[in-house]
Image 1 (cartoon, rainbow, N blue to C red):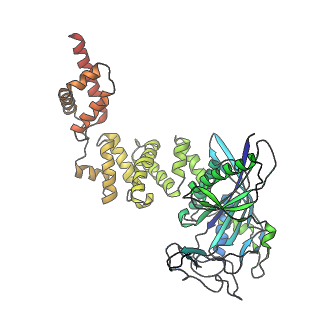
Image 2 (image 1 turned 60 degrees about the horizontal axis):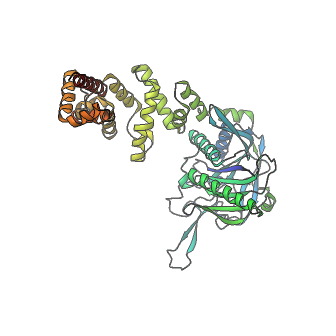
Length: 495
């Protein structure tokens, strides 16, 4: 008997606003700020404190909803979601339930050959909770838990998908696409390790072909794509084992232990009526008219799927287009480089630009831990360097050295090539002499090559390049080497 996974994801998105959702306290990075320094009577839940709605957070919520193809509700209402948790000061969370900000959206995942539409049930605004810090620093044998309320009240956008996802990989692809949309809109930093974007996965199983929806288990606070995929894979295995053993699957809330690779029971899963939702009496409804929507829509940038389509039209593969479009800064860097190539360096085509970005620039980005617009290699310098390789002024190996020197100094590639003496040798006589000298110095290897060990030609090629400090034209070296080997073979046959 086969089983089918039914997966829905909830995304909790901290919004890039200056102040919190319902008060004027400044939003700060709770991972490196002094605890409890950005707190007021409203976000600390003091009796009698009155909240007010952050208009900027609402506008961001509408912008995201439009990007996700949602219907913006004419009227949305805040409600009190009642539950107790140590880092929820009021004892309830101000959220939206019966009348959310937006509904009925979708995201497409996959490639141009195989696209899957994941529907979005709702998008609603709420406030984040505080943060618990567990420590043993106070000499207690069982440790203590401390509360930091800097994060309490930070604007959150919750995005709830329909249970359209059928595999852990699809869940990750959906999460990555959502991550790209949010960072393109510049409404979230995308730094999942800091908890500004967190996913919760609802997982259930059913017999393949069945339409029944069974009890689901929710995995909370997943802050990396890796943990999202691993936790769903683990939960699917656990539920398959339970069904095969005729055990009952209970609706539960789980945590994910990344170090041990397993889920941990936290509590039985609540139903909506357990939260005793009722309209927030201190906040008015949000009314969104067409004029407001049009104003917000006018600020919509091109989104990842539009970039991918354009990049594919330039002759890139689906994979390359997806990699380059994943981050807005990289997509814009690539676009500018392509434009510069077309205007000033017509030999520099989109495909080699793509290759240089995804190999050499990505390598530098990973080494220095900075974004593409922080590594001091502007698009015009990359295009110039590619053109210098194409024209034969330097070769690809030397160009890697040039690229790193450009990053360090900011100098133009041509200046760096001259300074470091990395001009490519194209002189046929010089290369012919170097090839012959390598063959004369390695007669045993040449004999093995002529006896049929073809792989030795690559070793000989490397020896020639090394003898010329890697500065010779590799195409001329390879052709010259092949001609020299052919002559040696003919001479051997004539003897």
